[in-house]
Structures are given as structure tokens and as C-alpha cells.
Length: 160
Image 1 (cartoon, rainbow, N blue to C red):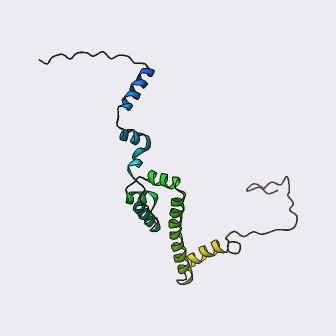
Image 2 (image 1 turned 30 degrees about the vertical axis):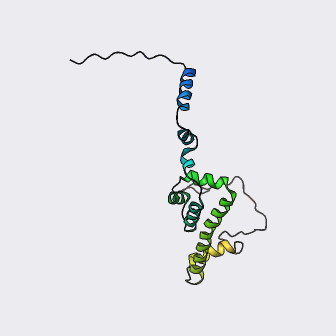
Image 3 (image 1 turned 120 degrees about the vertical axis):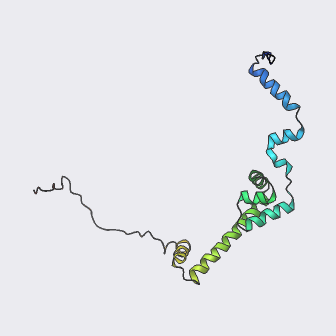
């Protein structure tokens, strides 16, 4: 027959005491745990020139922030934090992303001009010569418009 378990009485603790206990438990943790709790894992990753060049190359090839961060082994948030903290890095990332836009613009122009793709031609003209090549046409009407009040449409089957 198993021995009966002792009932343990738990001491009721106020919220203030509970918070004090939590704070003291935090103080006993290691400094790296405190950093991780406060900043996430980003303190482990140093912003090295190699990591930055890999990220920029990834952006030039059309990668998203998540994909570029994965390539250099950091979180997306860490990469965005680096970008916010360093205006020079921000400019380099924007330039890398804009280089992809130029490639797409060139491909669109080739499709429109060389391969006679009419959809590409329309898109190009609407965006480059917008005033002349827009789908919405505006017309001005001159003259008076008069409204008739009290006119009712006759019901079906009855004529007035």
C-alpha cells in the first residue's frame, strides 16, 4: 500500500511580495540571460562587414528582409534594428533594393519595345506619359440641364 502524501500548505502571497520574489529571482540570473530577456537574441550577432555585404547582395537579388536576415543568421527584427540605428546602412539597403527596380524597368521596356507586348506598352505609356495615356477620359459638357418634377413612369399595362 502506497504511503499517503503529505498535504503541503502554500503560503498566501500578496501581489507586492510576489513581484519582489520575481525581481530577486531575476537578479540571480546570469548577465547573458538578462540581455536576452531585454533585447532578444540580437546581442549575440555582431554587425560585421561580411554580414552586411551578404545582406546587401541578397537585397540586390530580390530577397525580402526575412530572407536576407536568414542568410546572415539573424532575425528580421535584428536586421531592421541595425537599419534604424545606422543611416548609412539604410541608404545602402535602399540602393540595393532600387537596383532590382531598374532591372524590372528594363525588362518591361524590352517587352514593350522589342517584343511588341501590348500590355507592357500600355503599362509603360500610362506610367511614363500619364496625362496623354490614361484610361479615364474627362469630358466637359456645355449647356443647361433642366429637371422635370412630378413625372411618374406609367405602370405596366396602364397608359395615361
